[in-house]
Image: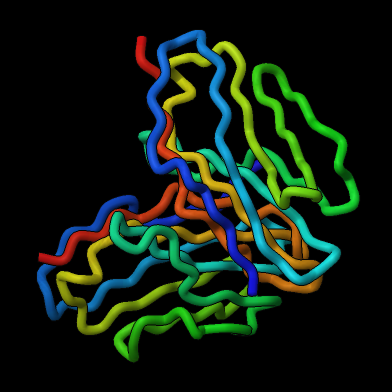
Length: 113
Length: 114
């Protein structure tokens, strides 16, 4: 079975540019989560969706960040404009039901120059 | 409030030694779930185990074992006869029943030296 698929795996761009990260969850999973991981702050939950509806976006750092889930098989996390402090590894995860294990994608390593 | 504490930031052991990773959690709920995840140097996060609060039986999977003790709010992870491939960051996590968000600990970086 295919796991969670994220693209791109690596992204290097200059500050001020728009960045779009993509995620395809495991088929049949109701929940989708976006995380950011840095050395300083560890693993942070940014936003999560249930049945394509955003439930909690309290972790989104600021208005430059936005996320959408137009259908059950696709989600995007967008940063516009990007800044060097956004450099991190961004993970997408999905789970079948509440309290079930989350399965993570391989992550997108984002570097903003 | 929920909290997961992994007091060991970094551990180094020589290959074939046993090693235990500590995890202490806080929650007001009586029903909750505990997890362990592994993050190898390649970077992906791999689910290892989920345990619910009503099941205090210890679990063994090959060289891995987990000791859940509600009396001390601990869910420790032991690797027996460690191998270099066990080198990774290990995260303990907690979610209350009915909650969707997992609370992760800061992780323990484990180095297995050849």
